[in-house]
Length: 185
Image (cartoon, rainbow, N blue to C red):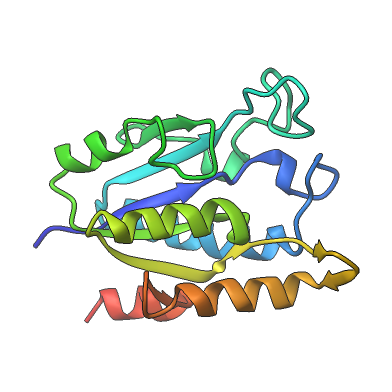
């Protein structure tokens, strides 16, 4: 039986407390993502660690050669992992992700990571558009407060709305513990 490919998206220092783009509850999401990554590695799932590096000199976070652009210590690629650098929210855009997945004969992806409303959303939708079966571990993702016009949208509402929009049409959204428990069946 082949395993799904486990994809970690942008779990980098800038998203954590005191980072240039601190998210809402990134530590909590990071703990769930780490538990799932540990499970995936222990069970020989192929693992791809995606890192965003800003190309725009005016970028406010993920700037090259900063502490913030570095992958969080809990997610640094290990022997056997694939490390992929991206420059856009969609991890497929102008990267070798498609080629890496083809080489792994991948059909199913499990996704965790940061910025639910941006990089997780665009990558999950792009994966579904390419025919991958996607499982998104919702509690292993984090986002932030947003504004639209005069409206302030709290991170909890952003998170719920994006996970709800992805669930069913683009991915199966489940919690980490539920995903790990069903792997042992």
